Each structure stands twice: as C-alpha cells, then as structure tokens.
Length: 292
Image (tube, rainbow, N blue to C red; front, side, top):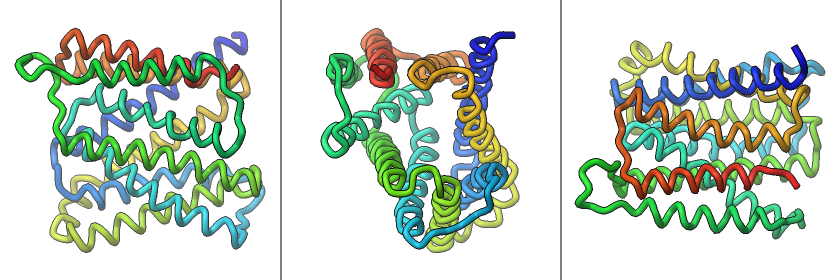
C-alpha cells in the first residue's frame, strides 16, 4: 500500500474518531441534558491522556508556558461546554458548519499580526462565507427547514471565538517556545479546563453530580478517548500526506459527513437555501485551508 493510500486511510479513521466523539457528546446531551459541566470535565481529562501518553522526552513545565496554558484552558472550557449545548439544542449539521467558520478570525490574526501571506483564495473564501451566512437566513414560513434559535447562535459564537482564541494562543506560545513544550502546554490547557468545568459544575450543577458520574462517565471517557485518537491520527497522517492537502480534505469531508449524519441519523431537513449555504460553506472552508 502506497503512502497516499495509507494517508487517506488515516484521514478516514481520523474523521470517524471525530464524528464518534461529536455523536457521543450530542447523544448524552439529548438523553440526559443536565450536568454538562461535569460531563465535559470528564471529556477534558480523558482527552489529556493523549498528550501524556505521546510524550517521549519527559515533561518539563517552564514558568512561561503556565501563563499560556492557563489562559488556553479557559478557552477550552468555553469551547467544550458551548459545543455540548449547541449540539444539544441545535442542528447537528449546521453546528458543524458554522463552527468551522472560526478559521476567519485566526486567518485575520495571521494576516495582521504575523504578516502571513494572503492569496486570491483567502478573499474568495471570505466572500463565500458571507454568502453562506446570508443564505442561511431561513424563511420562517418554511416548516421543513432547520430553525435557528437565539440561544443556539450565542453558543455557536462562543465556540467560534474560543476555537479562534485557542489557535491564536497556540501560535503565540509556538512563536516563543516552538515544539519544546507542546505537550506540556496542552496538558495544562486540558487539565485546567477540566478543573474549571468541575468548579463551575460544583457551583451551578452540584445536584447533577451523582447523575452525571453514574450515566455520563462512560460517555465522557469515550468522547475524550476518541478526541485523543483523532489527535494522534492527525499527527501520523502528516508523515504520509502534506498538510496543504490533508487540511482542506479533512475540513470539507468533515462537514459533508456531518450533514449526511444529520439527514440519515437525526432526520434533519434543510430547505434549498440552507443546502446552497452548506455548499458555499464547505467550499469556503476548503479554500481557506489550502496552503498556497
């Protein structure tokens, strides 16, 4: 089997792991609903295991890395919990599409602060995203389309902003330390997120702790493990396929698969304008990920 075929197989497995993680999170949210902070604390703890297991040089926590890690942990806590709520109350496919648009913020950060080069594809992608957002403004009289609630929009925005912040903070610490403390940085981030979510859960959801541990521990552990498997497979894939090919491939296929699951597994329906929006969004995300 050639390197390309191995790489494509790894991409497929990575996508499967990510989709399973999201399906588990959504299923638990729909089934139980309560104890989301405790549940996501469990996910963060098990996701952290990947970075503990894959460390080979011994863990060394430099003083400066703690600052980036702690700030990043707050973004992880926001992102994990917001995704849990968004998938629980909104469309599976639309949530996946809109959260992918977070790449806009990190792209502008790279252009403005890191002097990263732009191309015609960058501006075409931005235009397509704006068109996609406009088309998604569904008609209220259409009963067959997915409705967008204000609460869902707020949580999707929180996902987009937190994911963009995670990317930016990661770039900032990489600019100073390179790959030296990569695992340490992410261990602090995920452990801090788990602690933050557990503390918030103790304040706002304490009555749900026993129920979450009883019914949500296995779900959370599996979701966290699949998160780690996805991270591992992404890393291995780059040994077989260039990032300039893998990134847009995964982004586009990920959204397509999510919408197939929306239709087949969750029986979600979309009107023509929303489907056109989905196509524009997929194309925009793919183009934005292509490295010129």
